[in-house]
Structures are given as C-alpha cells and as structure tokens.
Length: 140
Image 1 (cartoon, rainbow, N blue to C red):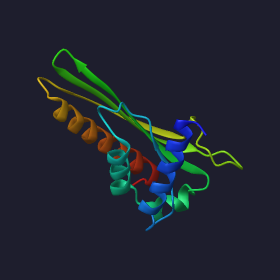
Image 2 (tube, rainbow, N blue to C red; image 1 turned 45 degrees about the horizontal axis):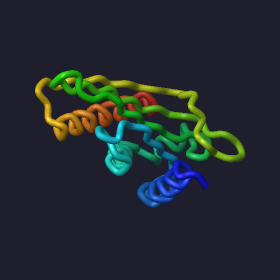
Image 3 (cartoon, one colour; image 1 turned 180 degrees about the vertical axis):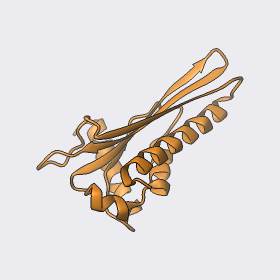
Image 4 (tube, rainbow, N blue to C red; image 1 turned 180 degrees about the horizontal axis):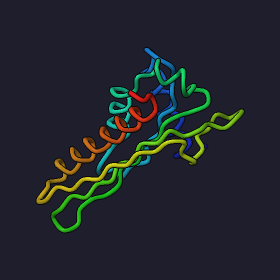
C-alpha cells in the first residue's frame, strides 16, 4: 500500500468516529500543508456539517466532501483560496469522484502577515467556504 493510500485510510478511520453523532460522511482534504492540516480541516467540517439534514438530501453512501486550501505569500502579503466541494462516490468502491456536484470558493488576503496569521486566514476562509456550501445544499 502506498504512503498516500495508507494516510487516506487512516484519515477515513479517524473521520468516521468524529461524525458518530450523524452519518459517516467521507471528508478529504487536499490543502497546502503550511496553510491547513488534516486535523484542522476535519474540525472545520465537523463544526459546520448538519449531518441529519444533509443525509436526507445527500446520502453519505453516495456523497462525500473535499476541501482544498491553497496559496501562500506574495511578497509580505498572504493570499489564500479555499474551496469546499460535495463530490459523488463511485459504486461499488465508494471512492470520491473529482466531479463536484456543488462547489464554493472563498478568497482572502492579509498584508504584512506572519505564517501563523496566514494559517488563521486560511482556516477562516475554509470555514466560510464550508458554510456557504452547506447553506446552498440545505437551502437554509
């Protein structure tokens, strides 16, 4: 098993219990490591997914979520793009398919930012993207 597959398997095992209160959505993150780590991304998803409402519209066996935060520094300015996506899952393997059913993106900049401030901006932008995606899915 490759390192990436092993890491994905461990991530999926960890995400399942985190969503024990609701359906076990698969949540993947493909972010720039200096801006967002898997644990921080999972925490943002967990805090913002109303699983019971979503499960009726988008069953966990048919859909999952993906986040991606990219960017970094241009001079002394932190530039960040965050995306949150609802992805279909294949049958019978239930892997996520990179063909978003719904997608949101947010953008942000912060002049004279430190690395910690840039990471904080990335988290804020991912939270905004996740909240916008969820709002569009459940029509709140």
